[in-house]
Image 1: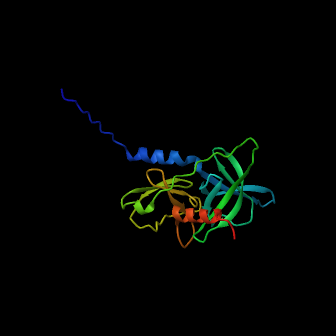
Image 2: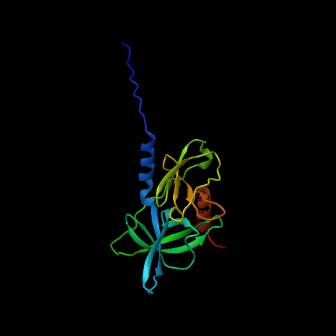
Image 3: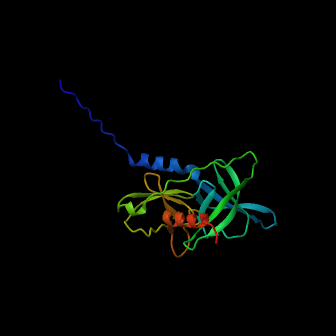
Length: 196
């Protein structure tokens, strides 16, 4: 008696991949804000741009055009709002902030770190997702020096492939609008290396 083989074809819609990629990384994304003074001299919180977690110890990659080594910064995701300290700026155009104490003592920082994608394996015609203030997508043209129309509100946005793996960060500077995840990981290694 011969065995019978059944083949089921599974169709995965592109929009399902986009939804999954965003859902995988939602807690990694933080809104960045800074304390400033209004016209009456009262402290106010000004929201600008995004950033995303790049290490389990709470480093967040942000657009260097949004932060400098002075000022009081805050980072907010679904787990709460936290003070953030400036760590270092990279010459590529991004900086690192470090998650600090929660604004509400009951909050506990909870976030994921995106899986690192491989830009060199991307093929022309594949879709790239950008999660900034808004979510957008475009078709990869094969040029590894990705150009993204970056508004200030999308600055620091996480750039993903359809598998939800991080490809880099959106920058709002004049020189480049993108820094790759490889550049971010090299800067992380330099941070972790013992200082001589």
